[in-house]
Length: 619
Ligand code: ADP
Ligand code: MG
Image 1 (cartoon, rainbow, N blue to C red):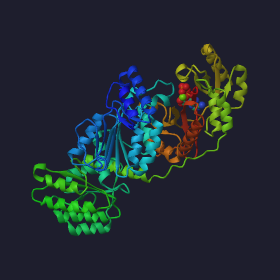
Image 2 (cartoon, rainbow, N blue to C red; image 1 turned 90 degrees about the horizontal axis):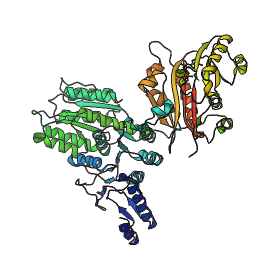
Image 3 (spheres, protein in one colour; image 1 turned 90 degrees about the vertical axis):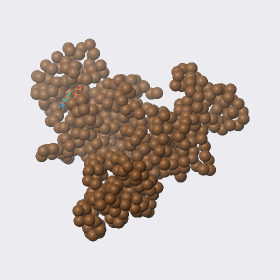
């Protein structure tokens, strides 16, 4: 291999696609060889694509490249595919080929030794003929680069992703909740969320959405209408659409009137519109035309069963004509026997309307389109800049800079103070002589906690004592803890006892390359057992923070159920924003847990009760 590349370099070759396997993927020796071929290539100004790669295809008639070694041909189209696995890539191509769809470009990049996935996505983004990008990812080699490229490209065109590796194998063993809840895949999700990439669980769902997005305009809102000539599938479509967050539009009075005049008396003129099985081209087509004119409606799902007593080809012809000229997206579900009514499917597809077999697939595809519409319309985020005492914060963190350790709790509380994050009054005490003075500045009942680096989960170790009513109780408890934790030579903190609010957790964890990832969830058992938490990459806009809070399953608990007053979510939004700012300002913060934070009723704020912070050595 090295000699071949040397020869290529000398001959002035600019790009080499290396299909050959036996590099990084086989171990140490392979990795060495891989580095060597990249070095050789760069010496001659040559780029390497691969190795261990399946290659590329380009269907542009002006280019027409087949530098690949599999069997699925590509006719011109507007979907481009980049797949880490050639096998997955071929599966996607095969499906498009089977239904007669074209494709624009294809790339399966293998080991990514030189030319990267991010560069390929960037290139597809700049290619005017590519309308939709489908991506299969196993690992994101350069998350920061991906974030930057995807952010740019998704403003212009949708990026659809299937990422494998959802399982828990990537969990890192860390002491904080934020760290251990952050499975490897969470980072990918946060990157996709931030950059507006649409992630799918299955190849099938991704491809359905790609087909719809590549053939139809992007919906302007979530207001849809469903038209059917048979009951059941229409209802499934309703269920699917509603659970995907779409809305059944209310037909305008004009539409209602037009359909009332057009359709048979048994028809149902509401949403879903049931034109009934006897509807022919005039009735079905006329209905779609009327609905397209309705300003309350932004996309249409048509369910069509081919009844033997109707001229189905005529219906298809009519729908095709309407679909080709429509400015709102239309998606079709056709239930038929291809041997008899194959023409119906062909005619409709030819007009550009995507055709699906199941109401579920059509509804999910439309939901993905609507989600992309929202992403495309979203305003550039406005990151708030909170007033903070950065200098003081730097002094505190500076004491531990260069070490890898948890900070004493009192320092963490001081730090929270410098960034305006409200916390319960906390005083550090080294020995008994300081206890009285500390207590004097606080109001009983008090809480005593051990403060030692070795005791990470304090209450498990008997290091938290609540509800100390007077000095006598405080002193007695101090003696007990001092003797119990003697071997750690600990300090202590005394806190005011906080009247109980709802317990939530706020956290942050540094992710190499992309910076801090913020976490929000309900505290206590909800964190431990249900893992009901949300992650977002910093910085956080107010919408990001509010979105995190609203996305947890337990959100109704915060909103208040059964006459309970709602919690002060506004305060939590600001706390998350301030925490994000703190962790962005100080990259040496490895992980941080505010657990629990007590949140009170609206306008009454929230308070951090326990805080943990670990700094790391500079890389
Ligand atoms: P750890 O998480 O290390 O076990 P915490 O400081 O979180 O220790 O204390 C354990 C629990 O005790 C908290 O989850 C909270 O319910 C309660 N608690 C701790 N400090 C206070 C306080 N100042 N006021 C009221 N409750 C508290
Ligand atoms: Mg705690």
